[in-house]
Image (cartoon, rainbow over all chains, first blue to last red):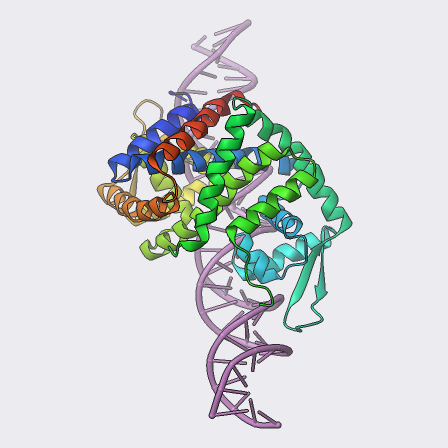
Length: 168
Length: 168
DNA sequence: TGCTAATATTTCGATATCGAATAGTTCGTA
DNA sequence: TACGAACTATTCGATATCGAAATATTAGCA
């Protein structure tokens, strides 16, 4: 390539400038853009790790959703949580079930529903991937001390707490 | 549904607990999980706004990448920036060009390359969408004062600056 | 120069995703 | 109870994406 890929920092700086020029507020764009840039980079790393485990990022989203929920979920709930059309979940679950990572069971209380849960093997995959990714995530935050990390977490959690009140 | 959808705050709390239980470090997971939860929610809102403009999120990613770059980019660069396979970019650009949002031109310096740029109409779409989304983004940060926003931005930018040094 | 490796885009077949339509079940209420 | 509306998962046809192969050009180097 004629010009080498710009650094993440440079990309961030340019993005903020572009959004501000387009009419966005700077104090807002600095935060939102940074959050998105960080997520994009993390996603690229996760994608590589998941390739090693032979799991697509969509399949991984299903596994983590079930792990985080701590209980069985319906295909519709999983579709909502993973930002995918309900009809797409059918095939995804077929593949995951075929590999023995999740299992489907009839909901005894409502015969239109199906309850999906992680198998023991599914939990194993989850734990493995989390341990792998925690290494990278720790590296990402290495420049922040304990106090700064806590402050960053606190500020983000204030924002999170507001999310449900916004209609959009 | 039997149980209503949990709040974003509750989802965050559970996610952190799950990751910590699986072997992640709490100070790391509080930050990373919050960042990802915020992005997911923002993505859901953007998806709705983009539907109104009849643009897919993948197409939008191409438009913003070109806007932020401030110069023409090759299909490969766009594929890298938007986390998609290079071969997929061909069809995306076909559709965007057909709609008059981008245009392809031969690179005079290298005949294997193609330079993609935003048309005037593409810029118009970009500005419109940014103005729309800035409204939502401002709402998201409404609970943070000017000082807190600046501190949040600063901490995130420290993290961003580190990204390129990590091999992963 | 001439040759090999690397780069860049596109084509191609297989797979994943989408939106609409379908079939079955449950809920609200007259 | 009976009936229509709402919900749930799936199927289906169209489209988007992927990875590998094909094509073309450039870069490195003997």
